[in-house]
Length: 382
Image 1 (tube, rainbow, N blue to C red):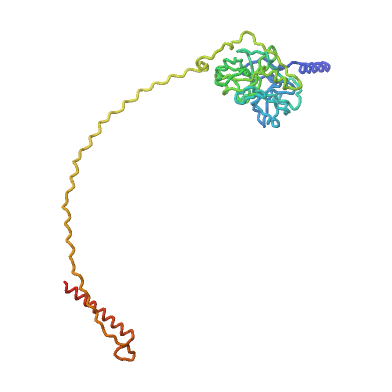
Image 2: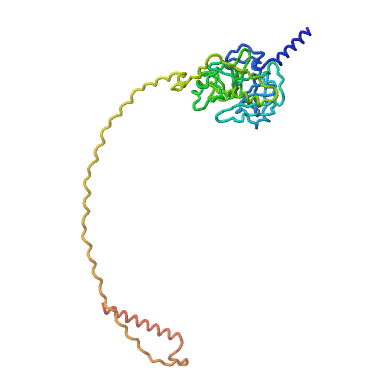
């Protein structure tokens, strides 16, 4: 019994460590829009940047994670950890962040990034690398593909069936944004389950036999599960050479994915009307409202009354002329004052004194005499 357990354990170790990339050892039958089987996506990585899990990635070797350039920048090196395994049980810090040198944050051209782990990963049944689409891979319109969805309303990781859509058709739904050859589209025209913020950087996968091959990296889209808005991914096969030149140590597994038949997207032209109009329900007919009632007719305003003209102002006779002022005769000339002989002033004489009191009496007498003459002249003239 003990020998059998040892043999079984050795067999499992050989199976796990020698098996090629892209094999989910616990994967069951894929059913779209259901919870992922535990261990079904052993390459999925969750990026925790500054304490928040905002993006995903995929393990492509024992030291490297593939994700989107818009998810992380070199400045996040010391604040980012990567979770791998069931329920994100294992955590690694980063040694390097390598964004594509031609990444454009406006057009999302070259939206791809490689993260080097600080220490190599030991592969287990629930931690495995995924294979990458080689440069000569072809993904025709309608090829079945899957993505994982970090649905916050679900307790477990969700998986979504997202058929490939050719770039010509995809361009019709994303005008004026340019869908370049370095991008690949996938999604359903009728809406439903699709990708949202938080799924960025995760893998778009197709299956060749029992091997999963990553064809795209979640890059951008419009809204969440909106009709006629297929999600846009970075085309992994376009960056085969850049990934090989950047990755050190264990080489990622590149596999050519070849689509069968003809690519119907080669001759696709956009319809004259936006294609999403055919997917929307018809607009309801506008209700018919009764006509507005006629405005009432009001009688005409009465004529303004005619008032008699204002009477003419009366004419007044001119004011009489004022009589001339009377002419008064001139005042008579005053008679000359009598001249009195002067006598010397004898201070010892009793009859005439030189003091000021006698002089004042004489002056008053003269003034009274002049006043009497004026009054006599005025009365005599009247």
